[in-house]
Length: 599
Image 1 (tube, rainbow, N blue to C red):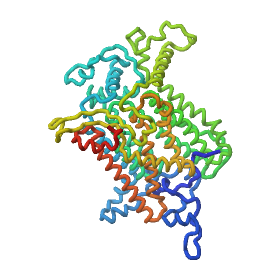
Image 2 (cartoon, rainbow, N blue to C red; image 1 turned 180 degrees about the vertical axis):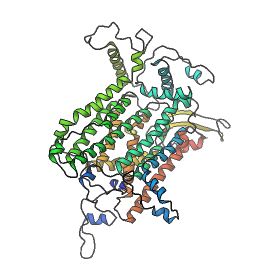
Image 3 (cartoon, helix red, strand yellow; image 1 turned 30 degrees about the horizontal axis):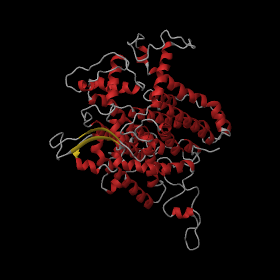
Image 4 (cartoon, rainbow, N blue to C red; image 1 turned 90 degrees about the vertical axis):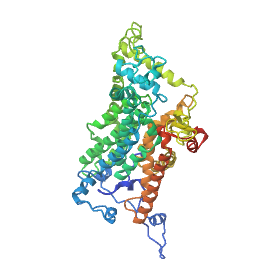
């Protein structure tokens, strides 16, 4: 049976920089050389470029690879950085120990602060209702004031943007096609800061910032490297599509946040469960114990189920995530039991793990989804006085009288929403096919104006001011190459980390190919941007090279990796005016339109 877990790979010792796990490893030591000293095998030739076989690891280290730093790992006498010492900087040992011990949090937090500055600076600009904010900002306000979405007057946008004007709220229900959680979140910002652009963008910007922190911690745990964790957080913070969606009151960034949170909780569950298994085995594979052991209470997997439910309760695309992550966590259990010595790991998982996994991911997410509709359930069943369709089942005959009227009405509502989503085919200027998403074939213009000299900071005869929903090109095009590398790592090296990030990517991306006939947009891709970043980070780890490689190999690899990151950051800064709606001369705008399809 094909194995997706990659547990056959040995792990590096405690306290090392585990960026080595992204590099190329050798299955055996160097082969002997010929009499004249020339290498006699491909292994010897690779060794000449600095590659070394990975050290053997204990069963415990293979089940739970040690973290690179942190409480219980970092030693009080940890050596100071040779680079700092060469620069003449020597910190007090106590301070250095503190920084090393908590670097796993300090580094990601620093990156998240940087991301927050990018997302919150001038968040209220453009001071306008951009793109689909015309739906979600107003729906969010209605939810917080009545529990369900309403029909707004035709001039509602103008009234809302008029200083001092009252919000034209009226309690007439409206038909909407997305669940309420994302709009509840958007409305929280409106409650804090008012019905204005900053207010309805605040909560989404906060989730965008927190997602950078989450991804940095997730990457650190996956690759066992604080450096690579911070690199992942930095790359996400400078992705243009993530930045644009973090600064707009749309639902897709909220979907991305919950998907990433669910993935993070599953990763925590994987480590926690394997640590428990390792503790029971005491370093020795035990076929009987591995086959029969109950893996016990798994709160992180339940938390993942809650996040999957919140994903579905924001947009229905979370349904595919529930299926993918459910399969992923079960396969991780198969890998753990096999590594522990179980002779029939699939049978063991089927008997002991599948049902708890189903309950944790599927049942919990369904319960969360239904609970998210509480405002609709609580609204009146009188015609025209509650949420749309709330009165549908009142007095209506049915073959299922044992199902409550409220649930029957909700089912009817959902059947109409499904019809809407599967038959939405109205042409749109910025619609695109998912085949073009990874190469950024057709971005979405969220906002565009043409200021003249002296208007909105225009310093030329003609200017442009645009918010363009597009990823940082160099990051995305590098991600295409990184995905090829990750496919190789997964298929040929059975690397579980490559399989995990590909699973997350597939859950957010592949389902859209079944709906190529409907109106869809590039910005839907923001839900799998973190997994693209993880792929690039894994490639960067390979460029840096294994921890046991020669000094020359590591220097060259680090220089190439650092240059790549700097080029991506430069590319982000070049397009930054288009991500944030800054006014620039028209000629400068044209220089950034690298392809006709970007206009």
